Structures are given as C-alpha cells and as structure tokens.
Amino acid sequence: MENKYMVIINPKMARMLLKQGFKVVDIKPHKTRLNASVFVFENKEGLSTAMQEYINEK
Image (tube, rainbow, N blue to C red):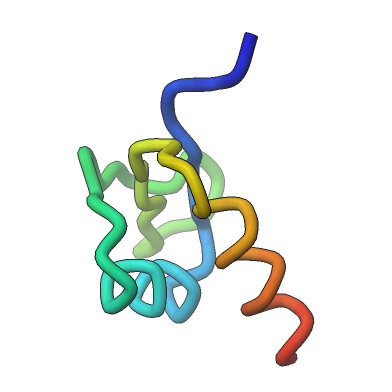
C-alpha cells in the first residue's frame, strides 16, 4: 500500500513542488531541528518523479 502523504524536509524542494501544482496539506515543526519545518504533501501521481528530477538537478 502506498503512503497517502509524503513529508519533505527541504524547503527549496517544497517550493519547487508547489510551483508544479502539488498541494501541501500541512506544515509541521521539525522534530529535531529548532526553527525548521517539514512540509506534508499529498502523494499524487508524479510527485516522486518531480522529487527525483529535483535531486538529479542538484
């Protein structure tokens, strides 16, 4: 069974995903880093591909 949500810890990746039309369902504080947040995205078709493309560009 595939996860319904995907947690992103990289704010630049989260911004890129938002620009591509993926939806954030929640923003939460990072559990171990002060002053950091995690971004919870709906795990829709194409999300993993977009994430991999971002990683490959770096």
